[in-house]
Length: 365
Image 1 (cartoon, rainbow, N blue to C red):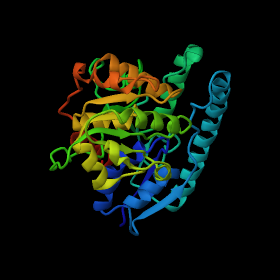
Image 2 (spheres, helix red, strand yellow):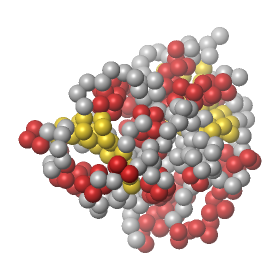
Image 3 (spheres, rainbow, N blue to C red):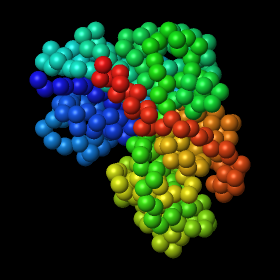
């Protein structure tokens, strides 16, 4: 009898797809037939990485970004987007019920998609955000939001948290350690990275500074990239930019005079090679990127995306603990680079290989 499973993957940042890919590939090797629900850039990425008759793709629009606009419009859009998110979670449930009528799944695995829980099929959720960081103006609603989240999380058989249980030595702070965590079945599994097991691969030409500019909020991207390109010209050594979007490369050209290489998008071995060869990484403060940095034990400067409350919190939290250098879009790059010698990188023996073993144990039960 054919074994089948359903994967539902968030597209709010490409990282959800990259970190789930090793799990998907594992079950393809085990002979599973997989249905994958995704959207946009993440869907295109998975289609380039996965081939064959054992994979079916379903396109379903994702949640709105939640961090749009500025000033008063930010809060108006936030309320509107929260309502839209609720509607789309209901739409996810509708699609799931339709799929379950035709397919008997062994399990459902969701990365950041909150509507893919089932009474019929054991369902698992991967997320580091059990508590959402709310703007100060809405802080009065924090306990209500945490209670609302808990009710959703309890619908899953288990929550996999890609972080560490220690309340002091961890990566996501209060986002992954809410007060009522024990009311939800969960496991802190450690970091999950697409670079897992690649740390000891042979390195080639060193890269002094690797810039990776990914993320789903694009309104600040062009100005930020141009600022970094201008400031990078004065830095010594080799500099490489990965823009995280295949549509962006046409706007930028390699600068051989200042030893700058620019790639719109890299995946697979090409991406691995650049990250392994990098001495210092400059990036947005997305959580998947943070896990990649910990996996590879790379020093880094984190720039949170403006208005992105989760990244603002993570950057401040991790910068405060001296695990990384934390900056803002307006900070001078050279001054931030001078602070790298002050950091004490987060180190752990529990990395991707051990995290995946824990996840497989529960999925295979």
